[in-house]
Image 1 (cartoon, rainbow, N blue to C red):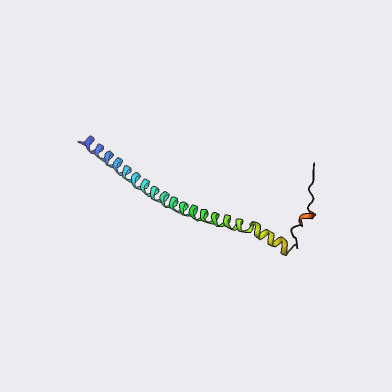
Image 2: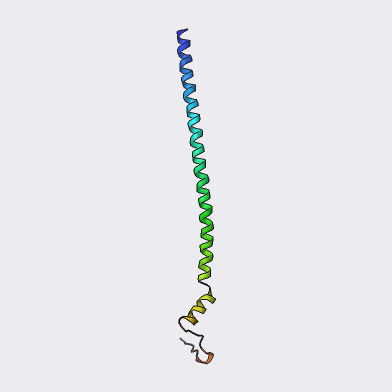
Length: 89
């Protein structure tokens, strides 16, 4: 009977340690899932910001805008057709 009680105590301790391991594992899983969701949200926000920045860049680099700035600020103008010289090799 003494061995039976010893085995029973050992098995109880093993079950208790196993249960604590499961609880810890579940807790870690929840923490990592929350972190994953936060990172996915951040990724989505950064992706949207990247799209806005690309749109802004294309707006700033538009040919019409550059042509207007060249004409207004630098007083540039298109050359007359007869003043264009073609360079031959």
